[in-house]
Each structure stands twice: as C-alpha cells, then as structure tokens.
Image (cartoon, rainbow, N blue to C red):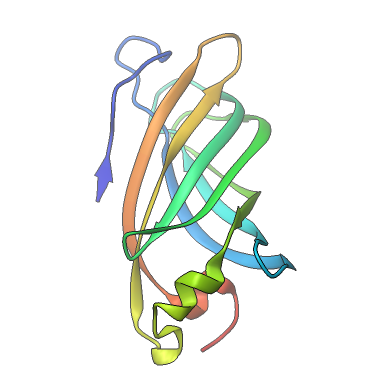
Length: 143
C-alpha cells in the first residue's frame, strides 16, 4: 500500500518518489545503539528526472519505531526508473527483539516514512510506504 502526502517542491502534476524498504545488514552492534546499512529502492513515477540531494527516514516494524536515518544521495533518478541505495540507519533493536518472537519465521509489517530532499532548491517531498517482509530477509540472515 502506498500513501502519498503532498507535493511540496515538485513540478506541477509531479508525484513524490516511491521509497521501498528492501532489507538491512548490521554494521555496528553496541549495547544501547546498533547501526545498519539499510537498502531502499527509490522509484521515480514522473515523466521528468528526479534530482535528489538526500533522504531522511524512519522505519517502523510492527508499529514500533526501529531505525532512523539520514544521508546525502547526490543522484538523479531518470523518468519511470528506480535506483537502489544503501543508507546508514541507527536504532536500538534489542528492545524490539525482546518484545517480539523474531525466530518464528513469520512476516512482519513495516512502514517507512520520511522526506526526499530535492536538489536545485526545490525543497523536500514526503513519502510513506507500508508492506510486509520476512524477518530473515530484513536482516540478511536466513531464518
């Protein structure tokens, strides 16, 4: 399910990018905070190129905030094409894991929301997407 909110900074008739969560891999595991490389797909549903400057996002799993991230993405997404990016994400998943049964092999619901920051002073455009993914494919660790 895709939810679009507003079109601030877009050309007239423009549609915000679709951002999908593809998975994540741990890069640093601390006691209070963990860092991940988060894989996202950015789709441009417009008939004009989308020039990105950066992205900031929040990732919710089963209704709870899991990770937040912000990173520069100096990239152009051609019309009707997509781009896969890897961004850093930080959070404390230990509390989340303790409240879940992550090894049952079931799918989890996710929601990713944030802003695509456009280059050339065009501002930022909100995005939000919900979906379902198996936990093993989320972390890159087979279950």
